[in-house]
Length: 262
Image 1 (cartoon, one colour):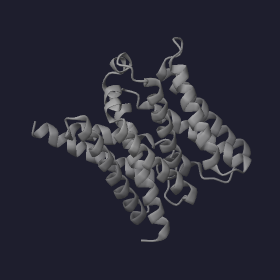
Image 2 (cartoon, helix red, strand yellow):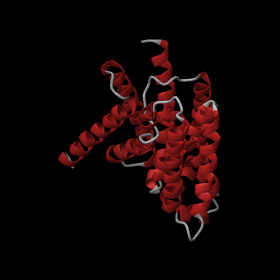
Image 3 (cartoon, helix red, strand yellow):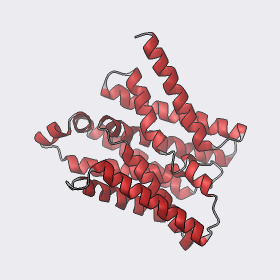
């Protein structure tokens, strides 16, 4: 296995586990579309960076983080619901990205950005950022597990007992932003949300308690990513779609077995 593929797998596994950790509370709270919206924003930011000649990572990450906080802010507005805010930001960013790509003629394969390709270069900075976020998120989950549990199942109750829900929502949005920007290298802008959604849905069929779903999601996400990357590498298939199909296949198998033995 060459050094480049190892780098892809290292970053990919950390991003996959991060996506699973943030995906559990987001899916349980029916807020999973935030990751999809941010992925579109990431595409727009990526194209802006390429057009200006900057390193995409250093431009896309702060923009996506800023927009994630803006979406949370807009979601509190009675006139703009959370899903409407996500839709507004995502389609606008996707349109801006495509216009920039068309107008400037940037030297980048848009299909690779949208759908993922492991042949994109994985920078050392991405490994560092992924490692820092991975360790921080793990510590955060362990230290505040009970509060995350409460927020995931009943946000109103969590507020009533004094949990600062808005702070935790901001942290989830921050982690989701990192997942989107780093995961775009392998998964692509349009498919990165699969890492957030599928592992939780699969784990909900397997486990009946919150802790089990969290642990199972992390394992499922990492395994599907590794299998998807290896299959795409050996068969010369696009990486993002291959990983999504691995997740979909596992979901269908688990769902079928769940129904058969229920």
